[in-house]
Amino acid sequence: MSTNPHAEALRFEDVTLRFPGARRAAIEDVSLQVGRGKFVAVIGPSGCGKSTILNLAAGLLAPTEGEVHFAGERVTGVNSAAAYVTQQANLLPWLSVRSNIGLALKFRKVPKEEREARVDHWVRLVGLTGFEDHYPRELSGGMQKRVSIARALIYDPSIVLMDEPFGPLDAITRLKLQQDLLNLWEEQNGTLVFVTHDLNEAIYLADEVIVMSSGPGTVRRVLDVPFARPRTIGSLVESPEFAELYNDLWGLFTSELQTTDATA
Ligand SMILES: Nc1ncnc2c1ncn2[C@@H]1O[C@H](COP(=O)(O)OP(=O)(O)OP(=O)(O)O)[C@@H](O)[C@H]1O
Image 1: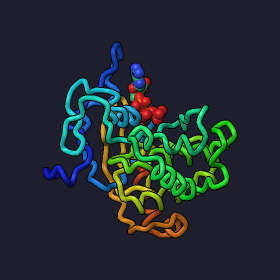
Image 2: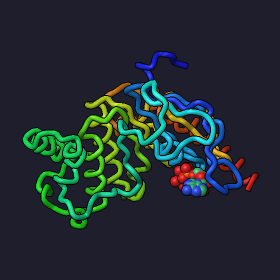
Image 3: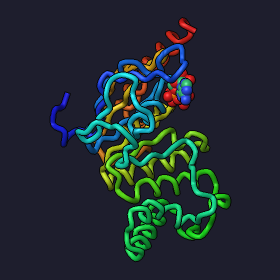
Image 4: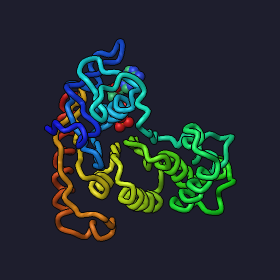
């Protein structure tokens, strides 16, 4: 384990979280580290505690036992260094695309001129030129996701937490957004923790994949994804190393499902 706080963004130390009245813990004895500048995917069966891990990292939940640390400090309240992209886009319906994207800059009192320039830049980066003045209800699901990603990344947060942000999208929009996110993240090089059910997505995007088990949620394995960056999803898919890693993950996943069935 790294002891250099500057090299480490997030650390869970033996974290257990038990919701009030629940029969068993949502997650139990979870220890993990996320290095600064790393892209880490968390995968596991439904209900294994993936969102709970993000909520703990965001400081929206407090551990029942154990400790969560961010940038060397214990998280004891809302982690204001973290941007959180939830499953739903959660845009403010009464604000335009521009205003939604610029919200965090406004809260941080960034001067208007600089704010406008940064919003323009991000509107272009996420491919929403021409839609700046539209309202969320006038956008497709994929466009709403683009707004929520721009809104999270625009203020250079120390860490971005994403909970299945591409879940409900069609396969083509999803692939496009995965590549876009990859390009944006490679440009920014921040720390990103990404929850997904999709094995391909985990391998395309991440430096490390944390595989979780359920009942209660624990960390089963951490796999390294050795592919160089910048990455292109199209060329990764054709490589034999991709197939090998996919099979490793699939093996872990299927044995996990069998264990879950056996204990159900
Ligand atoms: N507010 C809550 N109160 C009680 N139990 C909860 C609460 N939120 C989550 N749980 C339970 O905690 C466990 C972990 O839930 P969590 O949402 O973290 O799982 P997940 O892996 O993100 O699931 P999914 O992949 O289906 O989104 C589940 O058993 C869930 O039922």
